Length: 336
Image (cartoon, rainbow, N blue to C red; front, top):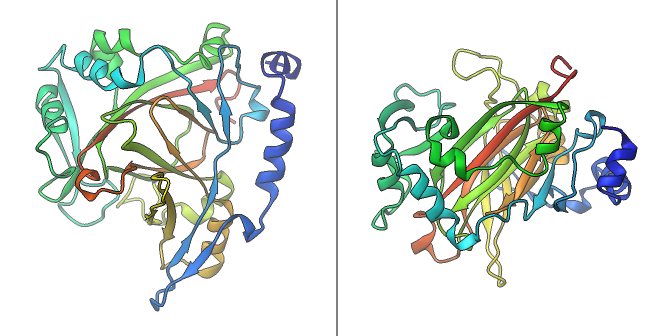
């Protein structure tokens, strides 16, 4: 897609691109706050930059590949279903084939300790009933996180395929033979579920399809650019998948009087100072709410965690979210 066509679809793109370039070029710590704990391991605790947000509309079109190298959030990307009914619409579609087998992750796949990660096959009904059980007190079983990840639900359940539509921002690329869709993957899990820091070889349009309560539960994304890959890639490929980093980080919740919490980052304290400094300067985050979509460029590292937005501890660990990842590549760029 040419810049002229892109400008006609989104007239403000040139101004946005200039602002974003300046935003990314800035390495000033004025946009973040660094804290060093008294812990002798020198824990890095900081407030990263926010991923820029755009307003999506029916006329928005993706730009060419040279411009698809920075992340951004599209607000109100889907309006086909009222927010209050999204979760019930999705649960209804999933329950249309209750005996469909799914593989559930128990624990985190980047945990090197023996016996800390497993995959269990079960009927979809069993998982959905557990996930939507109002008596559930947290998102773990036997103290292990539970997650249904990278599931091709639309390929297996016709009702899900009918419910989930190609994003209006991506459809012109697919119908115009500009891009090829590799896979549509579902990620459905309780509050507290984490996908460790990793990268994908595809562009990713990640949409938060549903939340058990849109005011209470969301997904938090932490992103790092490919330029820091040499600091993140594993030296041991036996313990982790090759696209997964052993660098660990944690969210630090910051409640506010407005009722909308933010999340600082606590970085792996075993990192050398120069590497930790580089990561703090390049890290970007966002909290994705129901109906919003995040574009993750190819090769960007990202960590995802289901989070609670409420201060009341009684409701922090009982919700769930469901996201859909549209993995695609622009034609002629498959090996770049």
